[in-house]
Structures are given as structure tokens and as C-alpha cells.
Length: 445
Ligand SMILES: Cc1ncc(COP(=O)(O)O)c(C=O)c1O
Image (cartoon, rainbow, N blue to C red):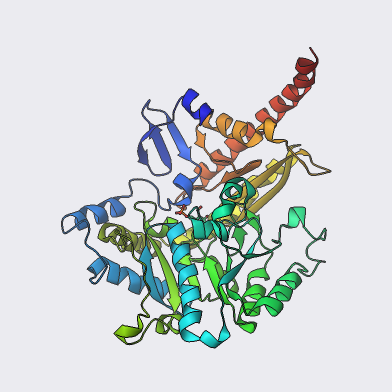
């Protein structure tokens, strides 16, 4: 906060395609997709039009005791493209609320549908998980820096080690490990399933943890274990949904249907805040009953099912069809993977993790020992500042450089983004070496 007050603020005034333009007229490539939300670029004519058309009808009316045409049509579309079996949609406003809804639904489901199974009031999640910043979402999260201060407010959960292959908590190597990290999860599920309402997971990649990718087959295996032990499988597709990984949803890479699925971010193509929690018919039916039993799901936000958001979300999904977005993304993933190869030659690039158009580049002090940079080196921050000077906006996660371009990025723009990243990492890693040599002298004098 103190530095923010002193620094020159970045104030974005306009955008076009993958570019953002600030109030000084400076143009930047949007390397974060405006925090992982933008898919088809800024000022997309079809999306602009969808908002304007809906404004000509109504901006907002409540979904509490009523509905609106875009919300109905969008729910139909979402159940059509979602993993098979997710047949019901509950709207909210952002990724965190979609997660809160999933957690509350899961607990209430067990109480109302299988009271004999419980009380199932807690959740299993991975260490380093991130599911949002509201208290329930923080409770099932585990990123020390973001979450530690709020511990007194959190409910108890059960944690398992993540499949962080670069720094394997079990000190094993993939694939000879045969995913031994799944065994402790089975152990937890088999011994504690009576208290576990669900297992919440970011499918294929723990994004905010630093783009920690899961080995192929991991997701399918943990899903099967949840079925075996009667624990709901909750997929948080807030970051991975809507084509980010090359399929509409990450779960579809492994043929997984979750019991509950949280979506937001790309849902409106980065235009409006909107979220949804999708549920199976089995879960939906647990909330039916005579009036006096009050089985309803007591949860509703003021802007739930906002017509502007739903209208633009429908237009967003339509672009996937008209522009063959998924096929395009798959070919861009191949290009991106190739473009990133030269970065391995940089002495401080320890690991490059790629899942679809989501990239995490882990910078280390020493490549052989994998020794992380100390906090005071602020290496991620420095690389981001250097990239900004060169016309690329990124937002690092500690020592991990993150690149998440809009899905509509062209291959040339992608190449330019990676080129800037290369230059920014090379320059700042060298400068950091120089600073490091200066520091001890400065201290001793
Ligand atoms: C996997 C995941 N879940 C939930 C959230 C929270 O979403 P929001 O910031 O819209 O509340 C995020 C945000 O980055 C996320 O990456």
C-alpha cells in the first residue's frame, strides 16, 4: 500500500483486442487477460452489441422469485456445454461466491438427502489451493501469504499435499512415482469420509499457487476416489473454464463430471461480473420438499442472474461456435509451448509450466539446487515492471511469472509477448545478481 501510494499509477482508459491503453496513451499487451477473464479481446463488436441490445430492454431485475430470458437461455446453454450430468445452474456474482454456493449446497445436500451419512460438515482440499477471498473460499484455500491472517475466522478443513512435481512434497519423480501423492488422499477419504461433505479442487492446474500443473490422469483418479467414498467432487473451474485449457472445461480432458462445478471469470468473456454453480440432478432433488420443510437453498445475491451479464455470456458462448475458438486455442497452445522453449536457456528459469493458455515460469536463484529467490529480491515484481516498460502487462505470483493471454491472441502477438518476457527475465535476473553483490558491501560500509 505504501509503495502503491508512491508509484505512478497505471490507469487503463481503453482497450482493443489484446491491447490496453492507459490515460497517457501508452499501449500494452494484456498478458493477464485482465486477471484471467478476457477471452475474445477487448471491445469485441458482438459482445459490445449484446450489452447494448440488452440495455435497450432492461439492465437488471431480480432472480429472487422471478427470472429473465437471458438467464434462462444461458442456463440452458451452460448445461449443454458442461460435463454431462450437470443439469442445473445457480447464479451468483464472482468466482468466490460460486465457491461459497458450492460449499453451502454440499453441506445442505447431505443433511437433506442422506442425513444418515453425516454429519458431513467439512471439506478436503489441496495445500496451496486458492478458491477466492471470501471466508468460506479462504477456509478451503491454503496460500499462506493470502490466508494466514484470517485463520481465526476460518472453519476447519482437511488438507492433502498437492502434485507439485517440480518441488514434490514426497521427493519423488513423475512418472516413476506412479502418482504416489494420490495414496494419502485415498487414506484421508477412507478414514474420514463420514465427516467430509466434499473434495474441492482446481482441475488440472492450481492457478494462483503459481500455475502448478497436475500430471495427466490425476484428476480422473481423485474423482473416482470421491465416488468410491461418497464424498462430493467439487470442481472449481473459475480459472480453467471457457477454453483456457483447450477444452471448454478442464474436467473434460479426463472425462470427469463433478457433482458441483463453480464457474465465473471467462463466463462473460471478461465483460461483466457473473458466476454460476452447476449441480447434478441428484443434488438438485435434495432441495425439493413441502413448503414447511424449508428445503430450499437459502442463498441469493442482489445481482444474481443479472440480465446484462447473462446476455453478454450468451454472446460469448456464441463466439466459441462462430470463431471455432477451441480449435484455434489448441493450435495456439502448440505454438506457445514451442515459443517458450528458449526461456529454458536462461540461467534463472527453473521450471516452465503450461496448461493450455496458462503459463507459470518459476524463477530460481540456483537452477541446480532449485533454491528460490528470497522475498527481498522481489524478482517477480521486477520482471513485471520491466515487461511493462516494454509494453506487456503481467502480474506475477511471487517468484512465478504468469502469462495468460486472451484466447483470441494471434500467433504473432503471442510471439511478441514471449519475446518481452525473455528480455524482461534476462535483464532483471542480471540486475538482481548485481544488486546482490552490492548489498553485502552496502551493509558492511
Ligand atoms: C480457481 C479460482 N477460484 C476462485 C477464484 C475467485 O474468483 P473471484 O476473484 O472472481 O472471486 C479464483 C480467482 O482467481 C480462482 O482462480
